Length: 161
Image (cartoon, rainbow, N blue to C red; front, side):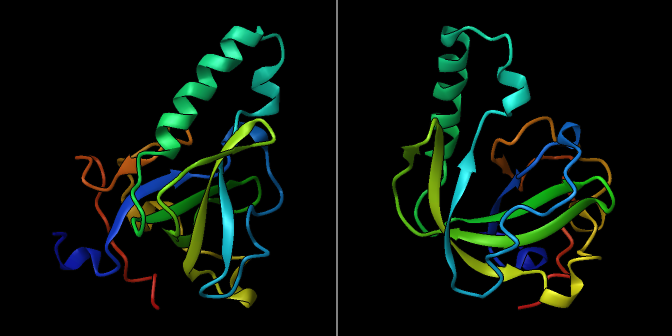
């Protein structure tokens, strides 16, 4: 059981897009209503694939599969994104809608349901990641990270249902 600091029962963090991609748009922005269902992806960055053998790509996909299957049905995930203009931000809290991961189009996916999302008129200023999970934590990949990791200091005051 999580303490009061986690009133949303978030179990994991996930980085949706990596800083190196220099993204100027937000992933999953089209899913802006509470209850919306969408597929959350565990993908290999296309630039990362360049020069990799099929065997190397398959090894990464096996790791992505394992991570996509880590959460059980109804687990909640805080989605963090990097935007080249806005920096590291929190954009969604989602809940896994099924118990299974699926492989589609060369990536692993989970059907998730939106529990919280940035308001439509606030996409230019979503909550900063460092204010929500602490400044000590640094993402190294798009894998699920337990919110119980010692470097995470959860502060959900900006995440209001």
